[in-house]
Image (cartoon, rainbow, N blue to C red; front, side, top):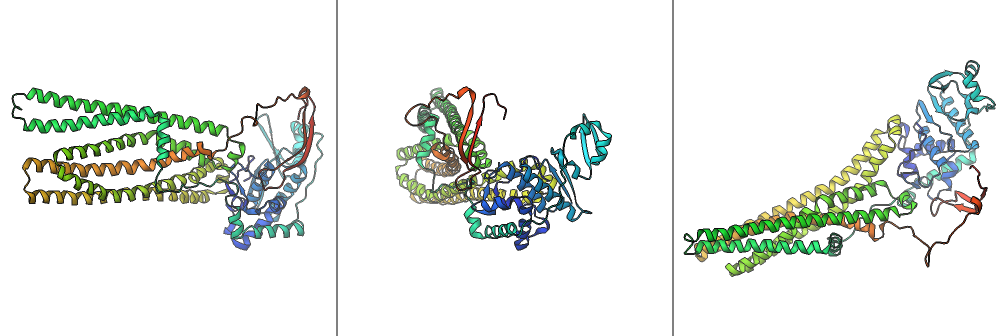
Length: 578
């Protein structure tokens, strides 16, 4: 099937052709079929002119190829599939008259080679070719008329008026093409099929997802995110969290004093009121912190989206030609969504973890100073497996994010080429691509989750060893029951705290890679069009009476390709229709 709007896959020209190769041909047999269809579709000379031949990359919208070349590429793909029924929707619209006759002759030759098995259904606007069809279907005011060209001309006045004054051109089936053209095309096909040619063509046009090097997300990334959120919001969260955990520490201290006070029964209302007030203050501070965090993160996401979108809208057209849509969808879709929904939750929890650690250190120093070295050594032992897990999760998250772009690009191409895919039975080809891209992305997600579980197991094991060691030391030292109870409660709480910290930071650090990817857009990942010439404002241009003139204009689709327009000159008079 050859659609009216050409469907071009993001990849090399070879990949666009061979996605539907008939009979599972491969190697030399496939190369020979490629030569035949390239010659038949008048694409041989165009491929020879490309620097990398069949290994030349084309974008999702057919970048590198003109409209006519894209139409001929779709015809070549259809001929390579060797269908019994060839359908083509206006395949000659984007080519000139000379090439149109050659393509029509190739289609006739394809059908004539096995006339009893093959047929072609074409939608054409070239009425001078209607005499070459065995059957013509003519639509007139909702009425369907069909028959041979001669019979319709005799029986339908509307059809006769439609073709009136048209000189019918008889087009004979084409031959195999000149020997010189075939040899040159065969040489190009063979040379562009080598591993060196494939490697040379890969990455010349299409933007390849890159993975940032480095073990962790740098502090500079988090600082830029804090600036986007507003440093006032950030410091407010830190300060309010400090007040919340000071209130909790004071509450615990007050509870110990209450339990040891000789007048506890007589002044129960007093002690209860102070304890309740401290609980209420802690709750209030936590609520304020949550609101401030949500407001700040929402502001950061809004600023990131606005600045990145502004940069995207000012990008040159060439950027969209070389950038797959999946690259943009993964950033403006997945990355921003995760920043909106995930980072605010874990960011507040991370600040809480820091203050909890300081509170533990303060309370232990005041109550049981002899346990402070043990807690410090334990924290160091906990940090080693956690640090390794953080780095692994960040690396897996970065590669998982990069693997999203081809997955989304494949989904976009599925939607764009739905008609071709259904008509030519390409479901298996695109399903295999989707599974390959999905497996690549899922692989890194599984690695990330496995790393988090391993870190939790390591922390649980270390926590068990710590609790056992503290309990044994308390039994051997003969500590007072009150001190022993406080020591064990802090030991168990410390272990639970480390487990929670591991979960929080194992989740927060990987989300920083999403911030990295969005900041890359602001740091030059997307080139910006120059708003005005350097050194001043744009010069004023006044067209003389609306006339337009082109003088010696030469254009190419991108650097390294042959000229598509060479020294073109044209003058359009005022009021002319072009």
